[in-house]
Every structure is written in structure tokens, then in C-alpha cells.
Amino acid sequence: MRYSSAITKFDDQKFNQMKPDLFEAPDYYLLDDLLTEEHKLIRDAARAWVKRDVSPIIEDAAQKAEFPKSIIPGLAEIGAFGPYIPVEYGGAGLDQISYGLIMQEIERGDSGVRSTASVQSSLVMYPIWKYGTEEQRNKYLPKLATGEWMGSFGLTEPDFGSNPAGMVTNYKDMGDHYLLNGAKLWISNSPFCDVAVVWAKNEEGRIHGLVVERGMEGFSTPETHNKWSLRASATGELIFQDVKVPKENLLPNKSGLGAPLGCLDSARYGIAWGAIGAAMDCYDTALRYAKERIQFGKPIAAFQLQQKKLAEMITEITKAQLLAFRLGQLKNEGRATSAQISMAKRNNVDMAIKIAREARQILGGMGITGEYSIMRHMMNLESVITYEGTHDIHLLITGLDITGHNAFK
Image (cartoon, rainbow, N blue to C red; front, side, top):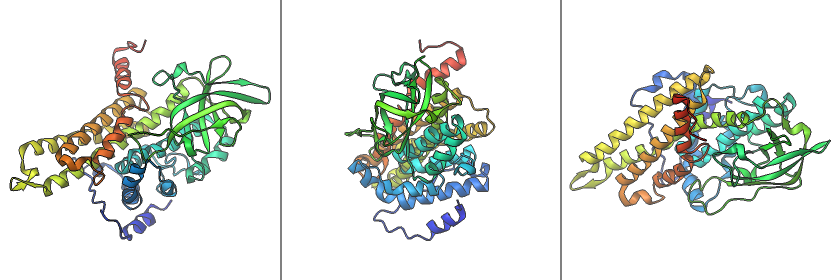
């Protein structure tokens, strides 16, 4: 991946779109000073790509409730698929702050697009890399890194969301293969995935991961329609009816509920950064609008109540940026705990959804239209605040960590 050439390529483009993307990232505490030159180069390449390839099409895609598959090669080009996966398996070999910055920029464009990248990276490539065999890594990871293959992650079931340990999806040892039965629900990327990392119980009730490939008889992926959120993301089910899974497709290096939860830690970390991007976009839109919108003879930015909204927005964004950056340092050092990741995911998504609502107020009636990104972000964040650990579940994770008392049971 050549980030410098990518930036030059994007900078030389003339954005031939009716409404140019004028986004300017807020950095009130000069956090750029804490980033390396490589971090900034990676972030700027992702930011330029979003301006060029996502912003011009995303409103139309959301209105049509279609995932724009045309952006998949671009996501691969900016390193959004497995950025921290070692280069020998097709990844970019980047650090965790780079991963966070990429997710931030993608979600600034749209949470659904970031979901596509998060699933591919943290929920499909990560478990194959961490829990798989060398043969599995070499077979799947390079094609997933380029976007030639797209993946999905099967954990949530129709009756088991916050309590994944209760899953009923199961597999039986049939001698020369496993026989997989069950169903997964609310699965990003499922309608077009080539492979799915599926979590199921063996005959002893132990949870294991299996790689299921499209084309295996009895495996289907119906799409979920009529969503008011993540409309530019493809969501569906994973259904297994006597699916014969080769034994070499079992991920052997970790089992139990801790295996899928380890994947979720990586994805939740990316969400903690991504939500900042959505908040930044809402703030930037509201600030620009407030400076231009004239009422009672002056810009509405001159009124106290609008300044209160904007000042509180930039304060909360800055706090979230500091939280995510420190968490990134801990991730790089291998010291970030699941509870710390939960705190950042919960705080930053809550921050973003509140900012989206306040930004919509500043825009008044215009805030509900597709002329601006705010209502789309707000609807998307209603899903982000629920998936990969609900707002309340993450609160209880923090409560357990600080008190030692389990409130889940």
C-alpha cells in the first residue's frame, strides 16, 4: 500500500459532485501533535478517499437502502481490511492507532460502511489470524485483505443477543466432516459474504468457531429489509440446514465464549474511534450551518443557545478523542482490558448520538433532509449504540470491573 501515492491521487481529483464535501476535522486539543507522520498519512489517505468515493454516493445509497459494492476495492486500498494483520497474510501490518484512525474516517462518511470494514477486519480476519491454522491464514486472509472475498460473523441468534452463551446453533462430528445446524440474525455483510466465521456448540456444549463458505449445501443468507438504520449496509441472516463443514475449517486455537468475545473487543475498539468520526461530521455540519444561517439579522452562531450546543459538542468530541487515543496506546502495548474497551465504546457512541441530535436541532427542518448527513448519522447510531454490546450491557461490564459483583445473573 502506497499512502503517499494514494493521497496525491486523491488530491489531484476534481470532485465533480453537486454538493462538495467541505468537512474539516476538529482538533481542539491539538491531538495531531501526538500522532506519528505515518498515522497522519494513513488518516489523510482514508479521509481523502471518503471525500472522493463515499460522500458523493452515500445519501443516494441510504435512500435506496443499498450497500454500494463499488467501494469495496477502495476500502481495501486504504487498508481498511485487516490493517493490523501482518503483511505476510495480506494485511498492512499497522498499529492499533492507525486502525482506529481509519475507522474514524470511514464512519465520518457512514456508520454502515465502517460496519462493513469492522466485520471484515475484526470479526472475520482477526479470528482466522488469531485462532486459525497456518493453512487457514494463507487460504483466507490474503483474499479478505483485498476484498476479493468478503466475510461475515455469526454470533447473535434470534433468541440470544446479549446472552450469546445461550446459543443453540450446533455441530456434530460425522467422522469425515461436521454437520452444522442453526441460524444467526442481524449479520452485517451476510447477503453477499463469501465466507462466514460462525460460532456454534459441539456435542459437549463447547463453543467453537468454524469457517463456512458460500456454496456449501444448506447454507443460505437471506437479507433483512425495512431497516430505518444502517440503510447503506447489507444486513441479513445466516441459516444452516445440515451444512457439511470440512473438519479443516474448524478454528482450533481457541474455544469457549472467550473466543468470539476476543473478536468483539477488537471490533468495539474500532467502534470507539468510528463514533468520533460520525460526531465530528455532525459537529462540522452544524458549525458551518450556524455561521451561514441568518435569523433576526445575524448568524444563528451568534446566539447564546446555539453557542452552548456547539461548545458542548466540541468538548465531548475532545474528551472522546483523548479516551480513544489512550486506549489505542494501551492496545499497542497489549494492556487494554475488555472493560476499558467497553467503557470507550459506550461513552463514545453515546457522545456521538447526543451530538447528532443537537446538531439536528441547530439545522432545524433542514436537519431531517438528505441534503445533510445528520439524520442519516443519527439513525445509524441508533444501531451502533445497540450492536456489539448494548449501551446497558457495557455499563454493567464497567460495574462488574469496578465492584467485582456480577449483575448479569
